[in-house]
Image (cartoon, rainbow, N blue to C red):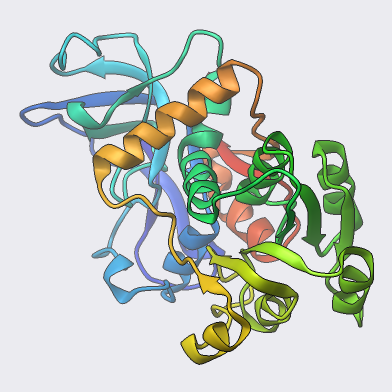
Length: 323
């Protein structure tokens, strides 16, 4: 079967397309004919050998890719919920997704609603559950001012929509005019380019203070956004696009009477699966729309990684494997 293999950590070019041995399903597993594979910023860090946590580095050679969507090819029926030809999404524990076929425990498959396209379901697999968990952890309330960093990314575009649906006032931060325009289209009330000097003053002049910050950038940008929070505010870090998390200390948070609510909030696989099903149902009902900004062929995985690292992407990036 066709797959993209990494044999050493390094630049995007270490992702090599080629033929590999066919996968085999073990007990209580299924083989999925992959139609779309998710590509994430974290996967670019893993490929480079610099993931957020060393435990995320796979043994080499490996096939990267955590999230896939397609149809069940072979394997047991689990609880009457899956069988051949059913459309599903699955998380693969970090490896195996950049391939024509992938193996997943039958218990981890999530069926795709009939009203939802497979590509949209894959785009929501990781980012949808992350955005919903972050929103729940932040306890969004109508009338509050919510600042969303990386608002043109996969998670950011969903957070804009979730905050809009909650009745919040939305400040969207991004580093490109196209991403700012997208955030406005999705419902942001104020859009700000964080590459401009004094962007914090602009936000403060327009809002007074911020109630919630979703920090997807980290570093100095995240720290500056933290400084915009008023007493009782909630700081919710979820990414480190800058290369590091925002250096916010517990002492700083206490002094400003701000709570830091790190992590996506889901403690176990069952909660993650429930959040994923909710995201798919919200999209099927038309209340949530994944933004797929670019698709690459399976053999173009290196180009997909390079585009993400160059910050040339908008919304979600997918590999089109079949279909």
